[in-house]
Length: 355
Image 1 (cartoon, rainbow, N blue to C red):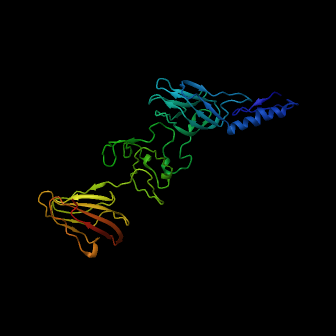
Image 2 (image 1 turned 120 degrees about the vertical axis):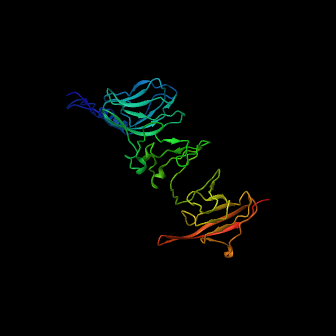
Image 3 (image 1 turned 90 degrees about the vertical axis):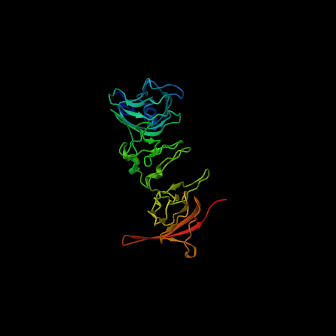
């Protein structure tokens, strides 16, 4: 009986009584050696700097080394918009670990991984316009179509409701802050949310954010509550909290919202009272710039009983036109009883900042 070959990775199955004096060498070369390739071989497809065009079909050889049997593929080259390129796999079930180093010469270049003879669309692979490798992934085929393992399949949790391999614009960003509608003037990018895009892109839990890859050289905006349970070190550059402007009406009892920032600034135009802040958090600290009326001065500023001062003496607001007092605060405690919030906020006033 003549030898036959397995359908998926083409290993030789020797027939009964065949190769009486050489069956051991054939077993080693055409089975054991090829199983080694199927488990651990690394094969490069394409050439860096060369265009991938039309179909690049992986070689298949019964009982001998080939490209399609390899466990790992490195894709090289570039694609252009005028002609989509395909990496063609055998029409058999198999999976591959893929290192994708294919780049685009334009924003519309397309690369797919498909099965030989299949009519299915296959797997569209991310490529990079910048020249930076587009990343690594796992591709698997059922013999008819090719799929990419998404992050849900890897059990990464609630942040993974989007497939890893869809397009270069998979994570939708915008230059307009979706909360404040302010347009960025630098390289800041905001993650889109709201009804116009898939809100699942925003479904990062406190566990999932460990897996976020924050690129260096860009401003990254975290728009929700994030808790860090270890140290944060800024080894270069700086950390700061911008001033938040607080609106004060002509006749006003007003508050600062501690959820919007640490540092605040306001200007009065009438006698005013700073009431208990909104969204108080124990341990929050910052400064408040209190600016006197710009027209005639002489306005007073009172404080809710939550604010505590040195020796219990409430400072007198500087009365000269547009004078600036600096108020440094630290939240010592917050107690909620019977739906009533009582806070202790230590405050130091430095008056009439000028030179």
